Image (cartoon, rainbow, N blue to C red):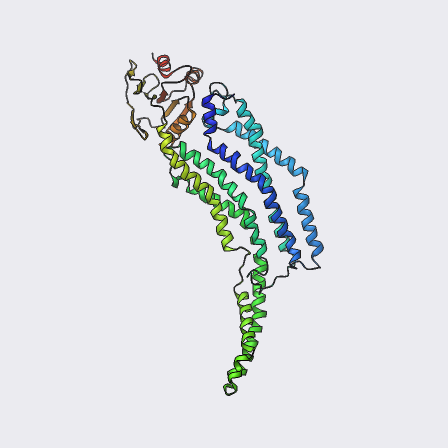
Length: 458
């Protein structure tokens, strides 16, 4: 069973919550709605008469090949293998200080807990398999549309949808709305996690992430529709020549009949159907001249972009709202220690412990200003030409992550430890580890901050 602090680390992991409570369910729900709608679009090519009788066998072959790719057992095995290969690589290269507390075994050591192994071997691979599966389906959909676009399509330049009768293909944007929101929710979890636990982060720090989400949605869901651009441009060119010639001929006859001999115009001219017929023809010709190069409806495109932005913007705003509360929850017993691990200053205003200092000289003093709304750290400028290394010792993983990210944003190196035992053991096993400063929590289970300081004192 997870310890209380590990359970809190799990509950507060916004990336995990968004992934398994929102993204994965949406991937599963899309299996029903999205695939069904794409099937309807594929069948409508025949129902609308866009596929000629001569190309019907080729179209059936394209559909059959797409189904074989969808049902391929080889691809399914490969997707699972890729998912586990990715997890193995992540386990090996993922920085220890960024591993969530609920992943770690015992008192926060380097081993994985049962929950961590379950996440690494079951939960994360399942989510990755679903993601890769949908990327494969989107690839098949794009390949299907590309092959259909190579056929001799019976497009109607004067069609009122202004895309030769292909507007139904653009309905795929609506079918992909669930997947677009899932991608946005996945990014929103990471953004919210970083904003909530990285105090220096702002909305504009993630503008590139937000832009990347929108671009990814456009590439995945809009780009496949661009394959019909060549056919539509050619249909418009042909339509302008054909319908434009017809409109010119009819207009010339109208002018000859009514403008060249105006003496024959009387009250009965209002009942002649020539004018209404010509007006209708010109409306048809106008459709040809207004043809669009791609079967993309502007409203559907805007809706897709809005859906792509919805979750990530909501996650950012929510996390910024929670940021003040997150800062105010910091333990007032946190210790900001002095430079050099053998020269420490311990401050604890809550328990009225007087400032304690070792007998060695304390060259640089760190200050902590505590306010109701949170904690503000003021760091001195270290004299070292290299990046200073700060060690953070706190049993609260969220505090470790927040302080380490704040320090890194200021150009410092940060190493985190979730217990005093882990910090002392690391120093003993790695004599070369000499942090320039130590941020030490006073109240920790096992070995508290004062006991750690005693061991570090000469």
